[in-house]
Length: 406
Image (tube, rainbow, N blue to C red; front, side, top):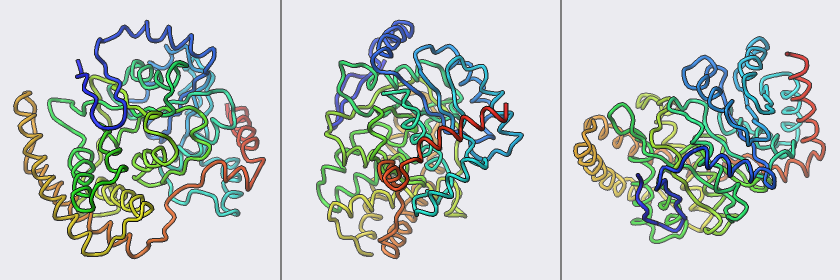
């Protein structure tokens, strides 16, 4: 059972009573009559061959309150796309598979490239961006949930708790961020959130002074969670990064566009585990090393838009302050682990902190070298202004693919 404490400036919706799932789903069925719901699943083809996604599909086949499931499929050839259509057939809902590497969606992407509007970096952010465009185009939902496809501990209760705050007509939330304890197999996971994001936010506050934005970010219990939900209007003007700064970028955009009382976080799972990234200390373009640089740059860019002036000395101070705070966090989490009978490798934790500290400086240097970098994908409002027919063309392309390759 979670605590009921409200920390920070964002509402926290706890799991206080282990409410029966069937009771919550019955309410969601009622909500769907006035606020139709959809689910977005950004997926790599390789995830269809893993352990997590088959169970996710099995669990989702029991859900009866969704109007549509939108699946973004990356890194798939024609035969793999055909296989994906068969793979998702057990879903009882109306579902659409966006074959992002197929000729029809590639042709649409070329139109975007010609206008300078296409996301340039491949990855989850680009996949999510196209899926959000499709949900706008299909007009089948007023509330949308999104979660990853590599959750090995998935059950459909996660979706119910994730979408409930934005589906309930009596709530005024535009956006809900999922959170959970990153504990599995007897150990504490979530190194980037524990050892980079929270200590870095605290270090930025100590170094730069008080900013409402930093208080806002520090209110989220798991800011890097890949699970969130929102009302459909949110995705018309949101601009998100295409790199590993996606989750921080989404939170930053919500902070820019909405009052804090329209944003919440919800406890969506007692147990959560997914595919883990390697630390990759030898290559700053891979794994958690790249992730840490992208996240740090996302924070620096946002603060710069708030008027913060950075220089080399500033980043050195931030790095030194971060390092001390993060090492204190290692001790804190070790004590927490010991008291709960969990494992924590202090050596590997401190190695991660050392890498993240170096990458904070690297991110700062990259920011100073290219302060005009455009990491954000354009809002769909801008895209439809430039190409008014793009959403209709997307729906037609997806329908044609699913018809021709069955």
